Length: 250
Ligand code: OAD
Image 1 (tube, rainbow, N blue to C red):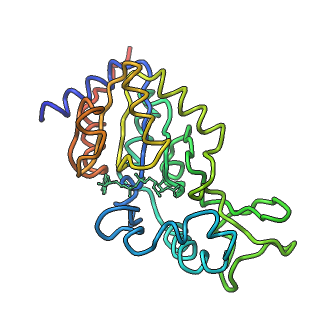
Image 2 (cartoon, helix red, strand yellow; image 1 turned 180 degrees about the horizontal axis):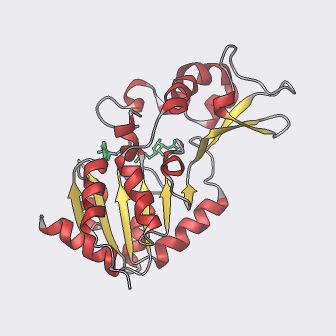
């Protein structure tokens, strides 16, 4: 096994507090396109035109038609992959305390992860902008756009648009984990969007070992990451989990 994989497995074994930060890359193997890079969402759709809160408020029907409708179709049927499952297994084995995810796809929870901090909210729930009631996204049909609550108000997804604040609780818990963890596993994020991209930097400043998994180097790779495991999340996380010995009982 290559040195970096052994080093990463040892760091996790010895760590008293390990957290993961995940991005769109971990869900690519579940058939969800990433936001940046070849074949990505923002290559086809201009985020300032469709993913900004001002765009949604101005023309919700259009944002539902171009962006949200397509996302809902993919997310309604997406299944967790080996990367999500490996993180859930690390949590079950007591080796991972929480997953901070920028993803809105609920795939960590579907894989069995219990402590998931949804940094950018979730697409699994729609919220009425009029009466505030919440409803599962999967229950809503998009026959007429924008989708509406029985009260007549327009539904928005419970996720963070550009121009909106990160949910306070998610931000506070993430900062706390980042400053206290001994290992941070950074999986499938381009580290281009703040404040999520600051979490590994904060972890590093507080003495943590940063392990990054990505097929492509990111702005974190040279200055922040201690160990770079190059490759796709599914196979790398599976091998990493297998490389951590299960303690003998008794
Ligand atoms: P990006 O799309 O910016 O980056 C995806 C990263 O995943 C890239 O670094 C890829 O190299 C990597 N990648 C691709 N395939 C992979 C695989 N199979 N395994 C592991 N990594 C892989 O996604 P994020 O960094 O998550 O925000 O983007 C951050 C935020 O930008 C999103 O949460 C979203 C977006 O605008 C909001 O919606 C507010």
